[in-house]
Image (spheres, rainbow, N blue to C red):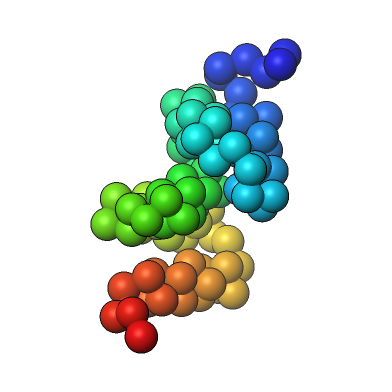
Length: 97
């Protein structure tokens, strides 16, 4: 409640908690948008993608996942993290079985 709109972390944490628990995903979407407005990071871009995917909006999610890859690459995150994002992208694009 005390988080300022210019702080990305508290908004990300609130949205991530809701995502992980599978609760209040509509509020989580608003909170992740606030986080992204404060500062675009690979973490909030990835979470926005995951929220959209969970809502059945994979085509809208993919640009956020791509931005997460771009920002994570620039931040020199570990290769395993980038590999995980690429694996997620492939899974989302794979035809349903």
